[in-house]
Length: 183
Image (tube, rainbow, N blue to C red; front, side, top):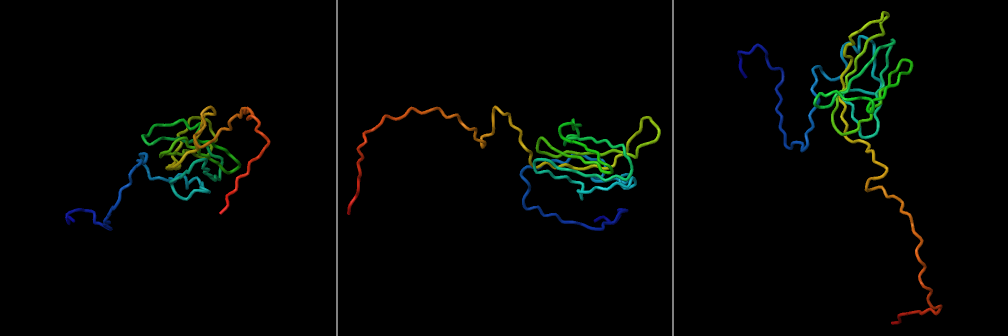
């Protein structure tokens, strides 16, 4: 290493990659570190069922429970990998109960998403307020529940076929023939 630099190395890691992933999915660009910001803690908020900044879904729904101490103005934004804002109507459902805010995620396709949470305590005066960023979460959707058209079910689902009455075979003679093998 150069000794003329102002910064000294604390740790040097040697990364030895034997196998690379076949299909790499990029993370959405984020200007701040993933997870809660200082405002989140300043407003005495707490995440109940989430430890880290990555929310993983394996199909179906994933619930995120946020506990607040005061009445809060909270809004959110959902962005895809390219940073394009998505319409969260069909993907995120919000429920406010007493001192908890529940977010239910139902991603419609596999991929990575950026979930931004903005908010502040409800002000006493009316007006326009700029809400600070409370947290940024990475939603990693690994599998989605597939929705099918009723007319075209998936191949693994068998549709009960209507049985048509079969014509009765002609009646045979009532004489029975028995065949036996002897050794």
